Image 1 (cartoon, rainbow, N blue to C red):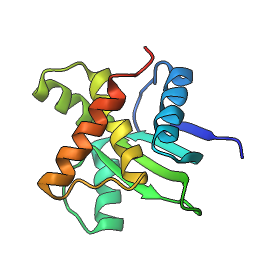
Image 2 (cartoon, rainbow, N blue to C red; image 1 turned 180 degrees about the horizontal axis):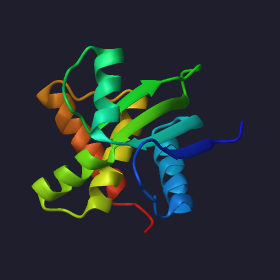
Image 3 (cartoon, one colour; image 1 turned 90 degrees about the vertical axis):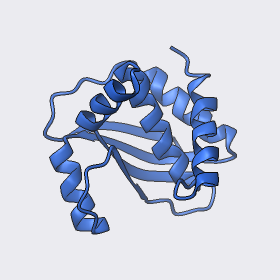
Image 4 (cartoon, one colour; image 1 turned 120 degrees about the vertical axis):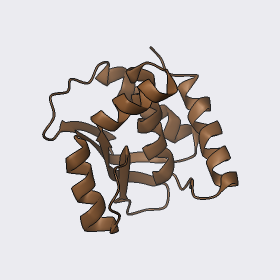
Length: 142
């Protein structure tokens, strides 16, 4: 099956850079974890758009930078919808004193890692997740 990675925007003006390189990096990261891409949809949106999804589907009444829905049909297949708040990414980049593109890449790979089965609720899980994010951010091809 041909890997499919799509990028969409909802209710924000946002232009993603380096789409081809990003696709290769995402596919390579997933392969390195022993899986393959089915279909991944990245939807870049506003805080309010993501808040509505958080309230409707997860019963959380909080802002977040990312929500990931797993649509995988087979164990090694990675498919899903990853919603990312561009406003939250910008705020976090400012808060952590890093550039927005680096923070966006971290959030993208964070969502992919969730689809690969990595969690971030406990301190140990969060430590492993951050370590994996750093591992893949260190090999981004641009």
